[in-house]
Length: 112
Length: 116
Image (cartoon, rainbow over all chains, first blue to last red):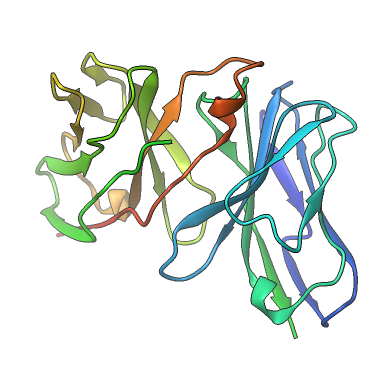
């Protein structure tokens, strides 16, 4: 089944403890992206990747890192999480940029 | 990406057509109009997209004005399961080396409530 998977789906952590949220797609998509969603603020783009080893900042990249070493994976790294990064995170992928995006199920992160 | 403006919320009676408007007055010639929807806190789901011609698929129809400054998503026979937040976004046409196609701005969307 064609899909985007995210792990973990739920995570509660404490301030400053490094964490990684994984994203994987099995559709051979070139483009992958991370979004966060907060109440009343819609979806905001964090980082995106046009292809392997090519990443760029979205609208809210501060406090996040990404890497794209393989086509199928696009992990989101929070080196020192803070409470303002408590949010619902979505990963998405598509054939090249600008095309129909397929979204993962979301990761709900709480930073205490 | 061009900015879009949508009404915050709309209601529709079950079985009737739901018409969701979107303004994108600063759209560029190479930008497509995309519609997605999000049910509860699930991942957004693609509905339809178009450049300048009207489009129809099994889920919906998309009507784009001739000047491309606005569009309307039509759900022809809304059901209770169509209750969701609907997002209209504009994006540069795809291409592996078109870095402008990477940015994606969703906005706040329209909360559509389908009532029995």
